[in-house]
Length: 520
Image (cartoon, rainbow, N blue to C red):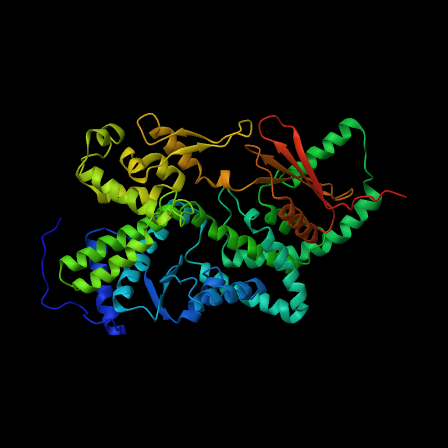
């Protein structure tokens, strides 16, 4: 620990903030972040907004320049009501993965809270956005603000030209399928703005030509051949031409829907792009928040050691910090699962402990860095090269498993009771870590649904397959609603088969085809 060096005067000693004080504190934070923690950040743009503006940012999934949609207004009313009645608080900040990195601070915050928020968002989250491999490979921080501006203007023009209702129907359907609008296993193409404009013009021309072509080919040039080899050859050609199976359902609709107008395809593309942009955040919740909490915790303590903040300011910040990383016990009424802030922050503090003061157990589990002393290098490498699943699998220690009192309950449908199969002891550490890591794998959290076939020269029915893992089926009501939205964007009937990943058996079938009523 560095020796204490007291400054003559703290940077502030009252709760009120001014832009001049914030600027001085920002400079002090930046010096510690760069010189002590070796953080590498985008240029910062810090904006101070009111609670109402914060609620507005909340409702627009935290993105500035967002287009209008009724669901955002509904969310705003809900959050505002909860906030005004004192039933829910607001986040102290919102930060955008962009270059420059934009972070919003609440004007109601005291100066101590502004300090905490700047350290947390403008340096912790900012560094993570810029350096983590998922954000580097799958998002475009340089172009997101321009794209959001384009999307908002484009949708506004569509509303003026085609009407609010028509635009809203497309957005409703696309939003319903948003979780299935990402490429999970390959990096999406990243064309330049000029290339995007050229592609849009090409799509417009192609769509006009294709409609006529399909009419002719459907009815006159290629009648359906039901016979064996020819049917299989046609199926194989369709698979190649349409790049099937396809996991990104919105991408498939954007490229192949027989009924969407060019402006509707562009709206589907906008929603798909935003879904892809937000996808890395789903996979790094523990790491991203853990990184930001570790950074703000280090910085505020260092500011106090240097005499740049008062005891009172430090206590106020530590009170908020403790609330953020609080983890209720499993039998506490407030328990709702593992708090990602708590897990991420404690894992990073644990890495520092292992580097500085390891036990024999730590040396056995982490021979690569236990006792190395260079905890900063280990953390910088982890923040850059891991996601939640791999981070937990690699770095969760027996010490922390004991501290969190983690255990595993197995729910086997063939058994009458639940069973505690692993506890925090020597026999259970590896299995607990493996199962916890698996629970953060998005492949296990979201259903695997893919487009598998459609005959554009036949009935055009869209066929999807849900590969069912561990016997977990879709909620029937939500499933049927999603199929209706899918039919709206595709224009023809849609069927979905649930197939067991283990046996290949068809477990269920759902379709938008109306059921025939029995005659009296």
